[in-house]
Image 1 (cartoon, rainbow, N blue to C red):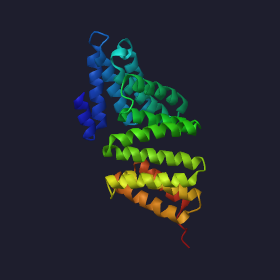
Image 2 (tube, one colour):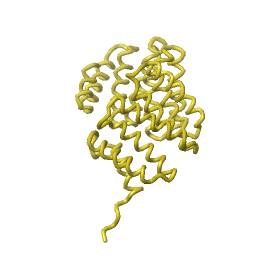
Image 3 (spheres, rainbow, N blue to C red):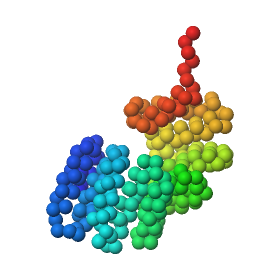
Image 4 (cartoon, helix red, strand yellow):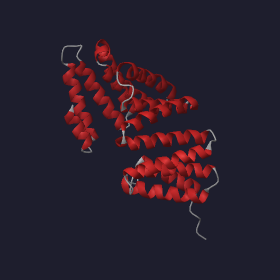
Length: 264
């Protein structure tokens, strides 16, 4: 499967998907059950997920689970990764309740059969927290994010950006709960961590600045918010391009809150 991943890394996601489609056909021609069919369908589904083709991705990922069913006790990592990917697709498609159930299954696998304190477990915790947040279960979400924070902190500096993302997510939840001081502290911490990784032209800094700006708009600090929105947009235009969804999100917030004055 490495050739397909090389296509993805080279910026050719469509070529990667085609490669994995061929891998599925080859694996399907072999006597079954064979874990290679489950692996090929997972790789195809995950490639489609990364391209935001969530409906097609879920179809392939569920086919991967079906192919894995007779062998899943022997391959808990593939089982967990497939559930994680399905849960992500469900979240991205707006089905947070289904995502919560799927990701809870993935977390159970990771805690009981794999490594409860590795980066993959932390990522499952983060996505499960997002699902709980979207269905209004903020206390459960915060508990999960605290667990993820502990894991990322213990894994060292290479996970600093992931730790910053967890802080940003917690800041958003506290903002929704009206706990503004805690929210501001967490958003500022996220920006600080991201800047330690890359000071200039860091899209993560821009995304976290937008979160802090949203808080400032809510608490009546419009001048500070405008500065952050403008900086966020400028960084994202330079690093991700004007059409990227993160760039569009910052542009939308700036234009919504600070529309240009009409010419006289």
